[in-house]
Length: 321
Image (cartoon, rainbow, N blue to C red):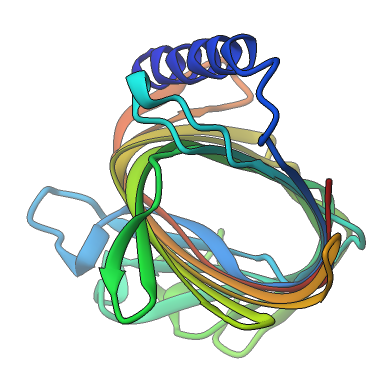
């Protein structure tokens, strides 16, 4: 709910801002179009998190979903200046995957029967992307001098990262003699089981309201930008379906996020630039998970951690008018 309130406030400011500035003669617009790569992962862990079994858990499980895809990004910026609201510009960008092969998914399990510090099972699957969408809405304060030809601007914004993934063609390896404890469930050490077809479907949404600061330096035809944003108000929800076991799980967490970015632009003329852009994000949340079984029963209050970490590299062109 708190994130929705923040979105409504930002959208209201945007609407008010454009209405106020409709006749502004010095308002300029910039559109970016870029393509590049996304490298990273999103994951969640349940059970004896941090190898701590004092809470009574007899298991630990870690699911790591890769995010190694190509992306396309479209951005819009302007230099809107509303002194009464301390607004100096607005920015919106949206990025989406343009291929669907994301890399290798890993599902690791530890059981207390063999010692919670020893990994018993690892499953590996190919990962197909149904959808990866990232969007970011930012309101910036006017630029101020930071010395040595640098300027800075405070900003506030809202970012959402959304994933829809499918893993398939499972290769699962038993790493220990867990079969000594569960002979009817797990095969002997070294056994590799292969199962064709879809394995796990996974959907996750990170909602990230943030504050930050941006710096820029104009060196003739070269413009350098650096931005750092931070959030301590992240909301995250995910849902996965283990198709082979007819098990589904829903997790929720709250936490923090660090976002760092850099951009180098070279002016081709008064109306166009070319640029390179790098963005890094690390988000971590803590919460709980609820699991639903095929017989209608469920387990809730399972200790849960989730995180995402990625770097996005983009190259593109800017149009100004």
